[in-house]
Amino acid sequence: MSGRGLMEYQNKAKQLFKKLNEQSPVRCSLEAGAYVFHYLIERGVCYLVLCEQSFSKRLAYTYLEDLQTEFNMQYGTKIQTVSRPYSFIEFDTYIQKAKKSYMDSRARRNLGHINTELQDVQRIMVQNIDDVLQRGEALSALDTKAANLSTLSQKYKKDAHYLNLKSSYAKIGAVIVIVIIILLILRYWVF
Image 1 (cartoon, rainbow, N blue to C red):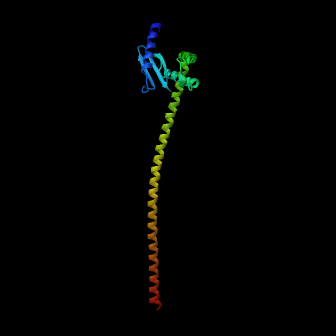
Image 2: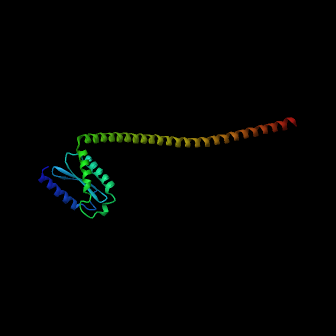
Image 3: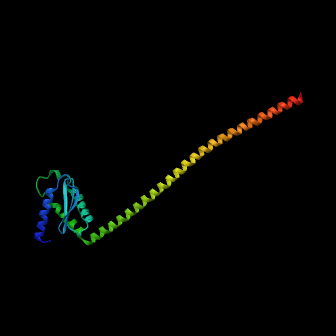
């Protein structure tokens, strides 16, 4: 990017800062010609980066989050006490170091490798969740079968009670018939 082009984008960045307020989204990407402004607002501090459109949006936000984390660690308690512009100019050293690591193709490859690993972990977690859901369905079916078994056992208990009662009445009836026959025999044959 030439000096004149750089000035143009610096002016666009200044205009963007003037337009930001409390209602602005905390994370946003804005196209500006062949480039894209990505910004992140955290605890009243705006972190802004200008990238080529082909640069990974995810990587740009990872870079901004990295800056935000480091800035909060170094200056988080001093933010409210700032009285002069450029109070944190020494943070530029960290910005340049982080910028270099994010621009380095090996670092990009490493981040790509990490992203691949994260996708693998995500795939495994989705599979685990699916397995748990299937177990839940199996447990639901088992619960339904247990409820049916409980209903059937209650019915069996009632039927068994009814049969026991019927059997008791039959036994009592048989004993009464035998007693009556014995009484009749005794009465007519003994007397």
